[in-house]
Image 1 (cartoon, rainbow, N blue to C red):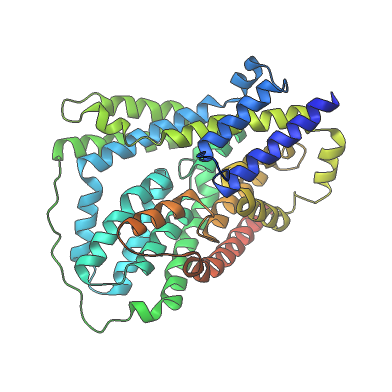
Image 2: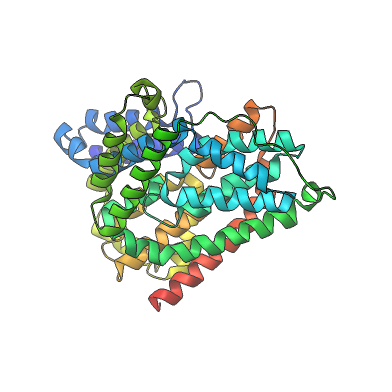
Length: 410
């Protein structure tokens, strides 16, 4: 038994260190490969049986994420996001207006669609817009990354960690949104204000901006179908339909088409992210089985995690140590012993998401924007991001913790 405990601890620590670093030195393993290696090691070491490992994978979360990826893919392929891009170009007559439009648009999309997928679409569009308008792109790219993270806090489908929390906690979509939409709304305003103040030298331009929308290939019938299905899925979420069922049903309906080749849609699916989720579920299950003792649970509860402010700080720190999705899975076993568990889960969702704005590696969304920028010859380095990310994170976390403390009466 002692060997099993040591093996489980070693696998858990090494897996999470690998996830935090994003790679294993000397090997060509990404985060998905590291998570799968950790999962296989848990079974090979005898910590989990194959049946226990299969049972540990939360298929509702995987299904929900897959369904949302397919829906976003159809919106992108139909030209919906290019149409939004054209509207932004023709209506943004000053850098500040453009910054506000980029932040609010990205945040609104991320509130209902997966924020990582939204960043994959919005970052290239913003790079194109700023190039044609003759603007420095970095402030607007920061707005995409930070607006996406903040906007995604609003609903269960905003980001992967919220999906996990929604499925585990069984909080209804409407209750989740009612508690966290105000946090997202205030957060987006704070992003606009702080990016403006900290990037003022790059945003102040005396001239009025003017540019045409540029060529935009739009498949009108397919776009209409994608929009109607997306709206229908969101309505189903609020109506109480299980989120995984609603998302995968909408995705399946969109796949029934004569206009879009399935291969184009499948290429939009982030397979490595789905694999990483599956692997992490198994790794955490193995650690729970071998390491979670009553004494450990009691010791963690001694940290007073029921306090909104303390839980916010612990979640934010852990999220920046190992990333937000692994942080949520680490905290999961300790929630059942706490009072007012719905509030606790909402605090974890808020803090894990908003903490992603602290550094460039704080969330996958940030890395996506940075990679798209680098591919276009634009450098958005760690220091540049931190200079804006630190005040944005502190301000939004404070606002979020204050709001949830007031709502819960804690």
